[in-house]
Length: 95
Image (tube, rainbow, N blue to C red; front, top):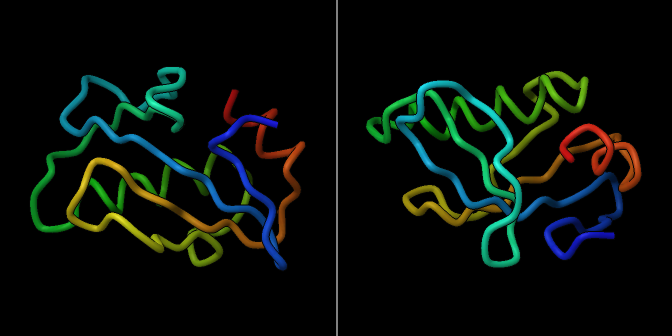
């Protein structure tokens, strides 16, 4: 398993490096031990955080309320928890 992906009691935890203000939202490989996401939202008033949650939820096939930002609200380095999914499934969906 990649270093940016960790199993939890009710799902997985993903370590992200987020680049807001990109042309389109996409996975951009790995960066410094984290999965790099380019997000098509500005880094103001929580818009980028909301876009990260929506992107991860869509890619993992879960509702947005099953994805939670657990660290990094004001930072490019973030950790999100996704409930009800497995490590292998998330790795396949985000790789």
